[in-house]
Length: 136
Length: 140
Image 1 (cartoon, one colour):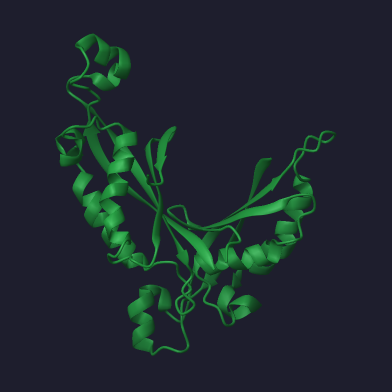
Image 2 (cartoon, rainbow over the protein chains, first blue to last red; image 1 turned 135 degrees about the horizontal axis):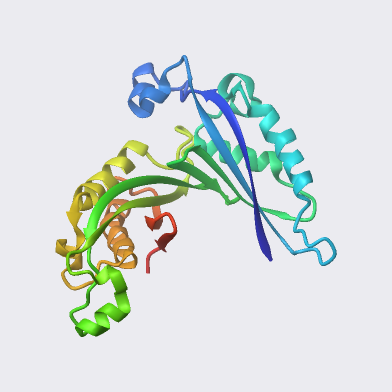
């Protein structure tokens, strides 16, 4: 089995806010991330798939197809958008780095022909990232 | 759902790789220029990975402020701009990056088990000595 990772980038705005809490509670827990005017990041997405190397093509997956799936399922939906206001999965769920990794996993699961989704890693910035491996 | 959250921290320190158990020749043969008697230094990067359920209320695995506080207090403040050979952890051990990685894990794990970050696990400590050299420790 081989693991293969493809990167993609998107830039988006977000804020952290739980509607069930008071403004004070949101500010206490989320600090400056709770600013309702939002803020943004240059995100880097790393998608790792696992599979066998095809003896004829030498590929685990068709990289061009994988790039197109990432573009269609994730980048075109998230890039230059406000995640809370424009991306349906974050209407009820706070777009933390952890939840973005889980949401991207759900968007990609079952869509990559010939390989199994192994890990979704989302960098909010180079020193902070979240991994989701499909665990309950 | 279980997810993993990682954050990178930095400190700069000096060290000398030298074992009292070895002869002068054997030290030089084993550690090469890292055995220079006056020591040398690195800008270390420590990557701490925490694992746990994503809290449905906050959307987060762990409280970033608490994680930052724990790492700054137990790792960065302790090692930054110090000579690792003089640290208590290395009284008996050579401060290789392997041993440093284990020492950092041991310093941090009490904060995770029943401490301020009790709900989550310390999954892995990775220490980069240079951009080409790094070590990982996930506990015993």
